[in-house]
Length: 88
Image (cartoon, rainbow, N blue to C red):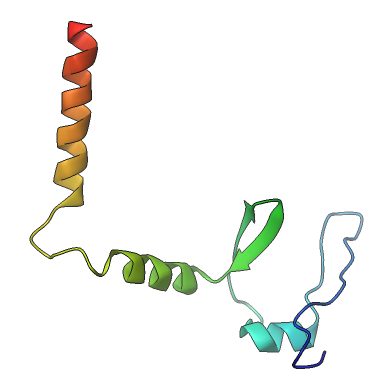
């Protein structure tokens, strides 16, 4: 696999298994025994290490001030919605 091309064709076997070629595993930092999270995204199969997902989430919420509780805000929103359902 060349440095310019980061894609390679793979084939599923009868049990639905596929082999990720060594060059692509090296490029992605995947090693034997790694756990990967598989998900569908816009019609594509995405494989990621759980650590990579955690890092993305941390980066996404890093700008939220420490004194702000998203949990408390969500609970307050849900309570308000429940009150509105009762009055309707």
